[in-house]
Length: 366
Image (cartoon, rainbow, N blue to C red; front, side):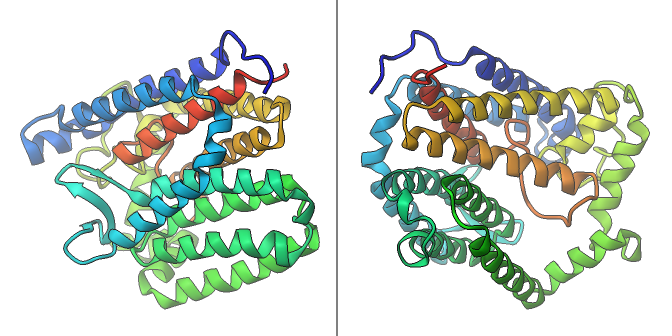
């Protein structure tokens, strides 16, 4: 292993902290009215977000100073533990049901979402597998089948909750890693066709998913039902204009947009801070992704390259899906906006993943 750098990537740290601070402000602004009504405490969600942010920052700093190479030896154990948690959460009476999905383990408000941690476990495992057997990535038997087969088993367990959004992020991240590893385009074409067929099957098997697709095409066909969230999100973004209505002045957070501090927090941000505020946040994400790609490019070994690629791919995919949903460019699915949306498991996992990415940056060649 090359000599350790004295400092990690400070630009990546600055972009991360910038997004985290904006996220804290927006979580309070978006949730204060709802929290005061439901819990008689306008700081209810902010206090929990601060707790998990603190936990995530501690994890980020700790993992930043851990040799990323050590994750190779933990890859199989992480997969085993996460598979166990995905099975455990499906047991009636053990897994907690929220928003129609049995996706949480824990007690009350303090709980974890195993599917979030499976995303990171899959990245670590694939980074190890691909760095050791990259020469097989152009074959079905020893390359694509073992990797995608494992990912599809995890996807199936996540879909039993069900949580299509998280499952899609995991699968797409795997595809990105395989593409970077040199998988054949012809194989991707076959995988793409099978994926589309599977997605169509999933949509047709659940009426609410079909309604979401129809609502995406024309949300005003069912403005009080399946199209409600998209319409209310657009009603938030539209009045924001160039400069926004002002911090704390959102109208849609007054019980129009359901739980705006989670998946639709970008809509409230655009309403209060306008096009300029939304663009600034997207620029911070662009900086984060640029530094992540640079770290992957200059990593000293294949494991570091695949590990960094997987992490930055996961973040990029989540940002694109979340912003796409909020702006009406994609069908509604439950995907948080990294570092901004309220959610303990998501925030802790994201900061931990960035800690691993920073660890790779300490060994980067440039």
